[in-house]
Image (cartoon, rainbow over all chains, first blue to last red):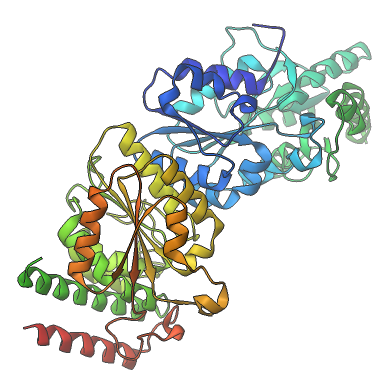
Length: 313
Length: 279
């Protein structure tokens, strides 16, 4: 595998790999070259349906197919899946608990040049608030392929939050993943940095910097936002006494909120949330935007140190 | 259809209407008007046409039905109950906390319900998905969907209409319950969806217009739809909202209002008198 790959590309590859299962049907809304469901279409054109620029219809068509026993992957940009088609996802897919996987690509500000209208920073909040929904955001290509394959085996709705940007491979090819189970990438006792999606890699970098400064930081990849790994988070709270969350999503309603919900109920410790500070994205190169919005290893280091001061009182 | 068959369906449709009144009156809420207007179509589909088995409600080869205008659940529930999917007495629990009969159809809880609906404009999309699955699996089942005329104001309906024609879903038959009224008044005054037939024609559908209360016309249209190849069919069914209950007919106020005890009693008496007149 290449050193860098966008999770949307890994998604398309995974679909092509599992496509030999004739029960799998893939829908797209005129974005198959971007969501990369074209990789599935190339192999299995008879089971790939372009629904056109009609995301609401696509979601409920997916529900209808699923009611007849199909495992359906419905893909579009995160903005138009979670945003535009919220009602359809909520009422036609999740309420009847139908077997539809939503491949929501181009999430977050790393969409880049298309700008704020296309940068979903609210989708985790929307999707994790719906009963029956499983919410997944993989950090790299390896975990994406593994988690897409697992999602196909779950009988029920899954929201897969994927990115446009090429991101580094974090995991070895033979790494194993389980939906609902976080991954401890690095051990540490002073603070736990809990990250998701493309913020996992900068969290690892930040932990190395902290280590050099004598701070032992644990790094956890929460690829499943819901159901969240309560045991792993509580363990981290008990063993480190401070938790910093990192995500490419609004600080309200995403990973930070999900982790806080666990921490306050089970083992309250000082927490800090790094994410998009309740403002819209903008056009620009992802490499320019990520620092502009504070989504960098340097900012993680900074926030971690401030949090440690709070922990020490 | 011979006279005996028509008589049988008239009796069944009247029983369905009585169930509608019972359910809505028991709940003290619900939507009688649009339920009564489609009772004849429901009777024809479930007691004459569709391949369904109450003992095997999830049979993969069955015909499918989607109540896209989900607020007309009383008509669907009453039909399913009389068809044997669950006890008719259960209609008394409609919309109540102790019952499985949700205000809007729920496919997980209610035997015989093929799709959960309620948010208008979505049922037609679900029916498109079911029809697409039928084509993929080379199955012979047909998919029926009932929409309201006011429901056509939802833009999503037209996304689905475009999609059904694009994929040439000739196994899909839609009904529009064209009773001319929605909650806030006449459809032409609230937000005019007309010309309905021309719109569907322009979207590439086979379009038929019938009297929604004439079983021969219903049957002829449904059979015609089966013979059409390469495109879906919509049957624009001209109906009377509140059909069968004198004081409810063509009265917009009965869209979403339950009859009081005495009113319900009068409605049942009228329907019983009609049954008696059928002999």
